Structure formats: C-alpha cells, structure tokens
Image 1 (cartoon, each protein chain N blue to C red):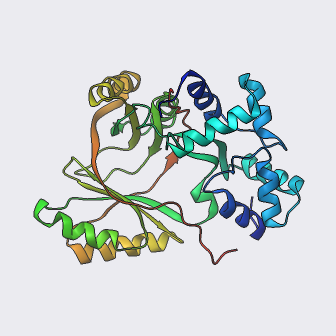
Image 2: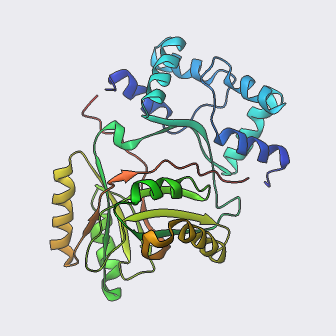
Length: 149
Length: 162
C-alpha cells in the first residue's frame, strides 16, 4: 500500500504522542478530524503493510535495569565472517552492524552489570584477536527526531 | 522510580505494541487482571519518570523514503560539548545523539549523532549543517554508513528481577 495524505497526517500526528485514556483512538481521531473507526482501520492497514514499525509505549532500556555499551572492532576482511560469527554467538550482543570504516564492526552489548560489559569485551578480544573498543554513553542528548511522512 | 512486578508485567504486555481496538488499555488491564484506572496510573507514573519515553507511532523510515542513514562522529571541545551536543540533538533529522569517550590515538571523536535522509548526498548536506553549528569547537569528524545488519534482536527484559 502507499499511504495517502490522511495516512501521512496520522503518522505525523501520532509520532508526537498517543493519549492514555479509556477511548484514546476517539481522542486522537477527534484531534485529526477523523472517525475513530477510520483511524483504527488505517493504523491496522499501515501496521500490516509495515509502514508502522511499532505503535505503543517506547521504554528506556537502561531504566529497566542492566547496562548497555556500544563497541567497535577493526576486523581483517579475510576473517570478517568468522569474527562476526563469534560476536553474534554471544547472547549479550543485541545488534551488530558492518560499517564502512577502519573500525568495521559495531555492536551493542546488553548485560546486567557494568562488570559484565568489561568481561564480555575482554573475552571477545581474546577469542577473536581483535581489540574490542568500548564507547559507553557518557551523556544522552534529548532528540526531537520525527519522520516527515 | 523503582518498578515493581506489576509494572514489569505491563512492560512485557505492551512492548510489542498496543492492540488496535477502541479500548486498548482496558483490554491490556483485563489480560493482566488489573483495573483500567490502575493501568493508566502506572503508565503515567512510568511516563513521568522517563521509563516510558513516549507512547507513539514509529513509522518505518525506509518505507517513507528515508533510506540513507549515517553515524556521524565529531571531535568536539570538552568544555563546549554539553551545550553543543544538545543543539545537535535538537536538529529534526538527528535520531540519536550521545557523548561517548574518545579512544585515542585512533579515535578522537566524542559526539555521536545518527543522521537520516533520503540519500547519502542528502545525509552529507545534513552533515554540513551539523558542522556549521559546531563551528570552531569541532576539530574533525567522519560519517560511518552501515553496509550490513549482522545481528538485530529486540530489547529483552530480564526475567529474574520481577
């Protein structure tokens, strides 16, 4: 499906927030000048078509406990797949991207304690022979990112 | 705020999304054996304390044409980063913005800002806007484009703290 102008208005509006209320779709629909049933049907269609990735509460992972750290490695090209296999095999690795840079493997570690971040990083350095650099978040800046639909 | 076992059940029940029905919170409350009012109060408390960043739609930016994203990294003077980092975060095309430690000598960058656009050329014009904003507080920068997703798993809640 291709979103029409009304769908785009919905996406722009609901990126800003969705109410906590007994009938939140009726509240949001009134703000948009739509019928509640039309709003729900359009959201369902966009969710089915994967135009909407998620609709609901977004949780701050760190507030739920545990520790997170962005890490990077410089991996020789001829060993890239083997090292990716070792890194991805660790359950503490939440996601991992190849990037076009000397530091060509970037992944996020998610563990219960800061000590475990260090331990997993040391383990992976020993196992792969590539030094794991840790880039923990020192400060998070508030963002107002919105996708212009 | 310390979340309790009930909050944790609410997180588990909603982290995949809200049901698209006229009374979504009533349905979740019923599934969890809570009153709807209690659920509203707990969601508001988590929202006020920042555990819930927001309740909203996340559009798929790839499907809406924002197909290029670059991790821009900047070497910003330490005494200016608090102020300038927030200004970069306020740009509407920056989705994540963090101060992180440098890893010298090879990695002089301490500000990370994810930039989103419809092409690499557009991402590079966005980069120029960030560079203009940082001015002489910036001693160097780079952009790293992702070329392959090697692994992606969602947030997994720890089960043993409930």
